[in-house]
Image 1 (cartoon, helix red, strand yellow):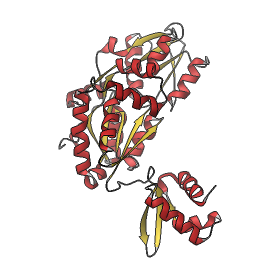
Image 2: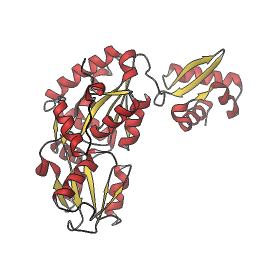
Image 3: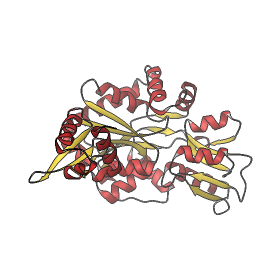
Image 4: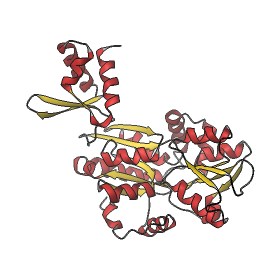
Length: 334
């Protein structure tokens, strides 16, 4: 381990709180070694440093800094097949700007990162973004991502007494609730919550739960294994799943980059069929999906950047929410 490695590890543990530069002197290296390591990491754009007082500095990993960084765009996504147009846009912008794509396993953690300012843009569930937007006043919803693309999987049959896994405060939970209502099973099945898709998949495949509400490409993967799949679009039609959210401070610091992103995002949504092969390659590399899994997952979604207030209100009503100041969390000027 080098001084640089130890500094990165220490900062990773500190997350968005960061660390005082003086704390790093306790890692066991000389002051000159620490100073050289910090200078090197800064030049490599792996850390960011801010003066907080007279000769006092706080340091963060670039991926953890809870504020926008001039000239940098951090895009947060979940492990899903729902964001090919966003991933293509990030790749296009890399030719001109410093762009980082950061993968999260939990929708709540990703949307919280957007609210904190650890990521500048995020593709995460609409319901989650609305709740964080209203509570924190620190993010806005800029566009749609994917519509549909999720469903319920059961091992044997849908009946009373079974246990179903889902993710909390998400489209998966919303649609599962509607599905159970339609089949008169509200309160008659057990619903348990997981943070990560890998955890819920493992629990289902090992027989700990009897069903799960999940998104693509996991849905198609389980269907291919022979499990019973109920696709929500077949029951309720198209509905917005994840949306593209933006941190408000990022709009002030990097408004021009955001405008460029949105222009390319719309273009790449329209041209997605032409660039599907490239999108698949990015997904395979970034998420570890097989090409077949990624391809099957794409078929489950309808991709559209357009998102109306009526669509948002309808989705929220399904979740039992009525929002009267929706305009306050919509980015309409871009």
